[in-house]
Image (cartoon, rainbow, N blue to C red; front, side):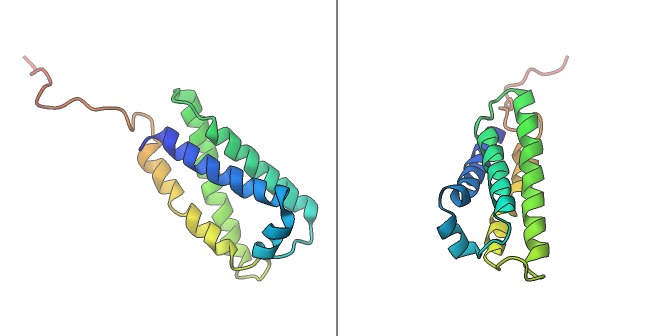
Length: 132
């Protein structure tokens, strides 16, 4: 796996997750509960879809990967934190804990594959020239 794969996988998840309430709010609210502030729901969905689109467009250049890592880790920490605070308070349905569970491995994936130099092929120690 590479950092680009991590970014694009997360991007697809966010694009679909953000697009759903924008394209079919009735089914979204059937699963996640009715919303009292439609403007906030649309704004959140739009920002999530925008983040997803940006992550999907990640390329192998270091600048692109750095930007994707910041957006990916930031959203992977922020979204579950909101879910884990608001579900126990009864402000949102427990179905949001599914989202939190799906986000749980993303910071680890970014740590494992999203650091500079990760995913690059390593030379075989047996074929490396010996120091003189």
